[in-house]
Structures are given as structure tokens and as C-alpha cells.
Length: 280
Ligand code: GLU
Image 1 (cartoon, helix red, strand yellow):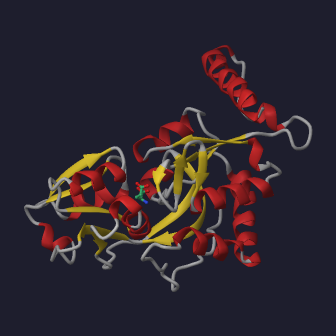
Image 2: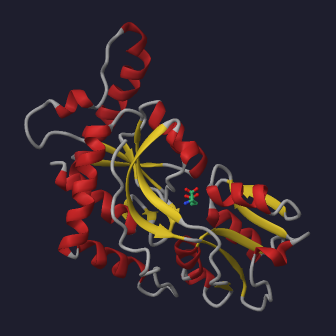
């Protein structure tokens, strides 16, 4: 049933984009002005990061998904009225700027560079950049990677940090971290780098059992924000209130516990849960 409405909404969204040059202004806020409960939200998430944002045949799971559903609920949007859209690392700013999504919950670090084109609510989680290596590897940090093949993802802070601070490393870029892990399984890659929580989720997948380990030596602080189109101060404030409520009610703790169950991961309790920052 709902699928039909999404499809219709998608067609309408495309039509709105096509027509916007004529001053049609048919964005999602048109739906927002409908009767209570009729608003839909297009939410960008990862589809390939188990425990964070994961698409299993149209069923979406993970911590980002749970925070997104909670926040949507506080904004008056039921789960049935969320359309989850894949938001790969390299596409996030464009998806927001081109009005293809309303908000993004996709392990999306708040950075000054990104703030030039998008707004952020949150943070709602703090992770740290780390390395995933084969179980028998003796790599213990980025200093050990000189001349080695390291895989990361285009458009991520993880790849950028390596380019900026470890130029002697052979960086291989992929569209997603799962592709990096597959390449490491095939022996072409010595290590994969991104946020510790992402690496732990991939390592815990059944197909990877026993093959890889997270080094456990973080070298950055990644503040996960809710990406919003530039100029969303009011919505940012609403979302920050929702995040604060989720934390205060204990739903945040439940979500992080449920979604890291079975993974060898503990969040940094000195940094989590974070306090959302004031909106610009
Ligand atoms: N949190 C980092 C970022 O926003 C790395 C994870 C990702 O690519 O989503 O770039």
C-alpha cells in the first residue's frame, strides 16, 4: 500500500525538480502543510553498514535508522511515512542541496567544510577513525601503513585524513566500506580505515567471522550529525530537542546497545552520549 504512495511521491519529486525552474516550488514542505500525520520524510541512510544503516531486502536496520525513526516520530512522522534513500558518503551534500532527501542520518561527521554547503543537527554520536586488518596482521596504527595498500571511501573524512596526514600510504578509494572489506578478503588490501563503529559492524558479519580485527587505536573524533539542507535552523532545533529526549528517555542507550550486540565494540563513554550543539 505504502509503496504506491512512495512511488507517487518519487514521481512528484522528480516532476517538482524538473519544474522548479518555473517557480513551482513543489518540495516536500508542500506535504508538510497537509493535514496532521500526512507528512512524509525522505531520509538518507547507508544501505551497506551493518549495525548503522543496512538494507536487507527493503527492511532497514541500524543505529542511524533507529535514531532517524525516533526523530521522525517527534516531528510527527510515523515510520510508514519515512522513505529511506541510499546516501553513499560521496553523495550526501548533493542529495541535500538538490532536494533529493529531507535529512541524512548516515554516519555523517560534522565538519567545517561540509557546513559550507549543508546544516547539521546533533551530534547524536561520537565515533573515532580506526583500522580494520586481517586477524594475523601486526599493523597497530596508521604509522605502520607506509607503502601499504589502505582502502577507504570517496567523500569520507576517513579518506581525507589519510591524504592530509599520511601521504606515504597507498590509498585505494571505493564507493562503500563493504567493497573495501571484500578487497581485503581477496588479499589486495592491507587495511581498511573509517570509524571504529562501522568497522566493528562489518567485522561482525557472518561472512567475515574470524577474518578481521579492529585495531582499537582511534586517531580522530567523528561527531555524527543529522545533515539538513542549508538554512534549516528551525528544523535543526526541533531535531536537537528530539535527540535530547531520546537520550533522556533511555531510547538512545537501547538503540546503541541493540545495534552493536554481537559486534566487538564499546562506544567511548567519555564522549557519549553527546550534547547536541546549538544550531547555526
Ligand atoms: N564519519 C565519516 C564521514 O562522515 C566516515 C564514515 C562515512 O563515510 O560515512 O565521512
